[in-house]
Length: 133
Length: 88
View 1 (cartoon, rainbow over the protein chains, first blue to last red):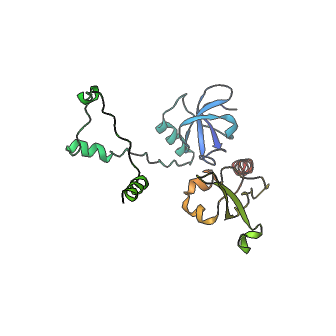
View 2: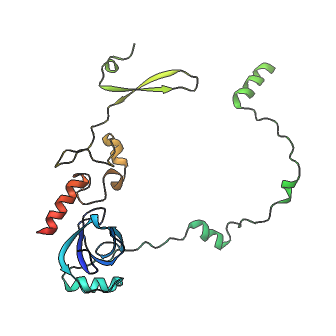
View 3: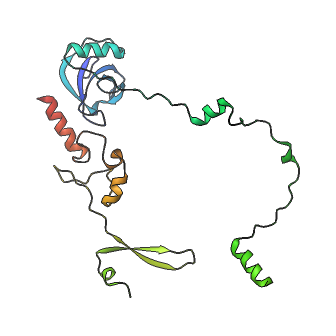
């Protein structure tokens, strides 16, 4: 029943209720689908086969699938793909506003660090002042 | 003695542990019940149990499934319905 070109309806997931065509049979449980849904691997349990089989080659391209579906009266609306926005930091780096990190380690690290005196909290400082008074 | 309104169980009690090691009781309004499938009555997954003011903050996709009939029917019932539509 699940052969290449079989028209199906997806019944699970966010593409549910959308029509698709089987492009390739991967194994007993999985097939590749395309059409109104995204082009993806799909479990046959998530498909409801319809009575039509379209003439498509194994692994047909998306444009072939769209034209085949159009002949059946099923329109496929193209989803917008997200374009990656350039990060502001990169822009600023390119403009020279931010100095790029140098890979070389600074020479200061090699020197032994002087032991820092323990930081005094505000409360402790206040108590000390009171005692002095 | 707690305030009269906190003596009944209309508010739920939350025990908080303070940094000093003490335990105090905080009172909060109770959460609403679990969302149910409109057809079979099974509890819906992925829908938070929060008071309306918190649900307002959440995004749409965090309040329901991204499936047709998401947040209204369970997965089994929505599958049945979509199959029925497809076979007609």
